[in-house]
Amino acid sequence: MTDQHMPGSHVISRSSAPPAVKRMGRRVSRAVGRGTAALRMTPDFLLVGVQRAGTTALHRALAAHPATVSPVFHKGVNYFDLSYYKGPSWYRGHFPMRALAERRAGDVPGGPRPFESSGYYMFHPCAPERIRHDLPDVKLLVSLRDPVERAFSQYRREIAGGFETEQSFERALELEPERLAGEADRMRADPRYASYSHRHHSYVAKSEYVDQVRQLLDLFGRDQVLVVDSETFLAEPQRTYDQILDFLGLPPYQPPAFGRWNTRSAPQPLAEATRRRLEAHFEPYDTALGELLGRPLAWRANR
Image (cartoon, rainbow, N blue to C red):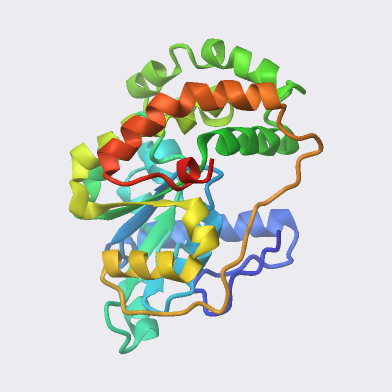
């Protein structure tokens, strides 16, 4: 994965400076941002999940649009999930000042439209209600993926990042209920509590989509929530992108490219017995989700 953003993106790419210099730059930028929060923008739309479902590729395609504005350093701020206790001024400090954003957008219809992405927002037990409280009119994008592939992809990512110590996916699945027991309740009780296992070890739970999507629809209504399948975005990126732009009220645009990001090859494929067991587990969740959305799910049609 490269640190360079798509051509035309409004995200500031990371420099090649040493990590300590980058951290200092971020601290200074956030301090300045907090001090000028009243002059800054808040998002008109959010990409809220799910993890390992093409959210990085979708974020970069949206950031390439001339009417959009991304956070200064990263695609996501992780405010509504991990940093809510820091307050709204801290959050606004991550976005450009309105006057500068309007100048940069120029005469592009619909701009400037600030947004950010966090694959954890939809699954976090407090984030959806926090978003509803702070940004009641925001539009939400949800990217979903075959739940079996998503769970296994997350496991590989957690292993690669050092967040998972179990060298067997099957053992990690066995431990998941114990690891997650009571964590959501602790997070609701203490806004500063960030659950390591809830974030990094929720392989099956994150892939049980239907209740997560239903909560968003209940909180925001169908006019403010769009669910896309990452398989469809991968197969027909421009058509899916056009659908998203129409939902957001943005003018048509063709990005320079639709890339794939954060992909990694598996040293060993998913065991067939494990795949069959997970497919059976997720089948009722997928059926209920298809009924909720009123359309077939791309990964079910491909089986």
